[in-house]
Image (cartoon, rainbow, N blue to C red; front, side, top):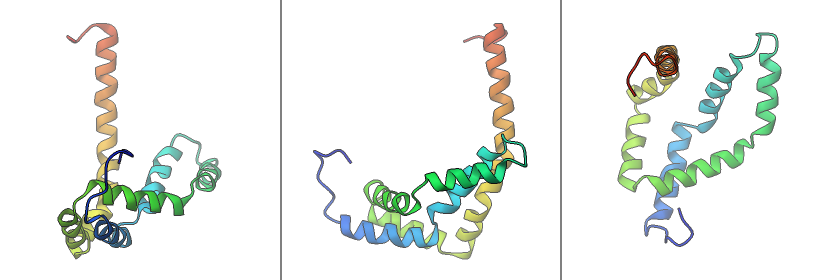
Length: 128
């Protein structure tokens, strides 16, 4: 939040709920998925060293703290309660576990379409 804004009256409750949400849906696995995706641009032999170097550069404790605070600032208490209820359920946990697979399956399609669109724009074969 901007410094001139005041925190919501229920901010402490939001922080507590956001911390509970992070127990269910921690930020580190999402960072690890991003590192896995970024490492794909390296030869398989260099991927472990790249990921290890990136992990050393990330302060996971600070990231977690900042993520909890951001959640508390962005989401209302009822929204956080709904997130906890959903992501804490077996179905919500399954959705969360499959989100990376879904993103990985869709990424090549999006990349291919963006590449084609960029080529069309560069060659003048599509209207702006």
